[in-house]
Image 1 (tube, rainbow, N blue to C red):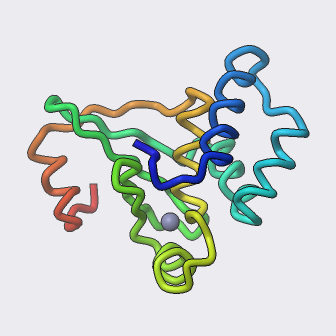
Image 2: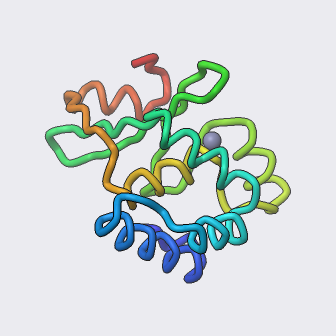
Length: 138
Ligand SMILES: [Zn+2]
């Protein structure tokens, strides 16, 4: 599912998952590693997690999408399954310049999932189709 991430990033998310389950916090050494692997967006992503900005949308057919509210009040729908976010930073940094692994929204989703703190919101298959089509303001 996260095949696009390098092994070091995978490992880091797994470490965060394990440590957070045990201690309910992310120790400094993992925070530093996070910053090293993902760059400045790691801090912004953690902020989003702390502000509970991430919601998981789940449909009866098993599809999943994530909605992340940015600081500007905009809401982005991210799909970790295809590693995509519609925000400008993703298009510019990740797709065009190939400089970053991901934007703060997708990283926030990964972190929130790793920490097991994402609230799940059920939607109908029809709502999910609309989301996938990118036209929904759900
Ligand atoms: Zn984004």
